[in-house]
Length: 399
Image: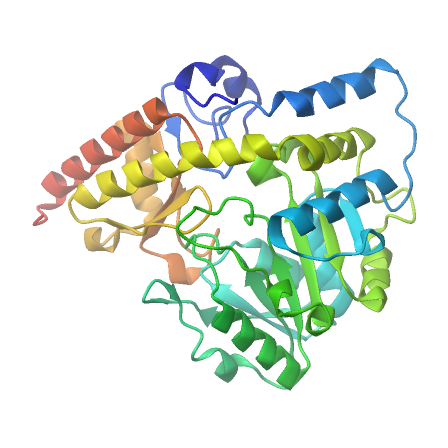
């Protein structure tokens, strides 16, 4: 049994090692509920697999397409967790899901090609498109009855459109796509001959009220235009190992992915130790993810209730992810200014909405990560509530 109480969190280690807006980058005394990275150490089976590998004392070159046993582990895991039937020979281990998104964009976009990017969504969709010389076309993603409203999606398709970005589960909303949503997206791609960049990095962090459905539930033959990324940072806490994979059911697309990944030279590829850790994740550590989910659900329910009792803000209850998307528009402030105010006045760090991280459609929102202990989460929300009270008083707002 894994334990997720406060005693398991090693703050002394996090303050030295947890970067990307987290403990090692904030001032002393600040609580960071920021980047999507757990505060807990990884499952012991992952640690043991890495230690065993290191003991032999060799760190030789690996097969260019990754260890066959790792690719087979990923294939088994995708089947067991999501019902996806993916040939191990069409799975490419790569140095992070983020890098996988860039490779996919480079594989299908030519300069001037358009890619439909939801707004808001994780900035890597936009950035990978731009890096390939593509043009991001922002589709304003709005929630209707708790799901993303796709009714206007077709109107954003032009003769230059080449690909649609699908983030499932969606970051930052934390919502899933229903079967009819996936059918609608696929039908448009079939009608206009478009590719799909399919980001499933959050697909393990799904709460029990909802069922996760992959685009592959529509059948592998229809998904020959889909290129997917999956990673090990959100589920297993391995962000620093730079570990992910790209996969498809289309051999021709897979060859393009391999070509653009630079794995056939020594310029690209994934570290041996990362693959060892990844195989341990898929073969031995999913019990840890499932127990973590039980803890996360309690944190989610507590945090959503607390936030929605605070004046002038509203929090969505996510189907998936360990992120909360919080509406702060009633304060009439730019998201970054709200975030800076909280950091300066109550020593709480959260992620700002706005162009930088999620697109202009997220202006007036913040994102809060709850992959921590109840004690740290509670203290963080106490500080947020205090800061909100100070802001209301300063701005003479009506609660």
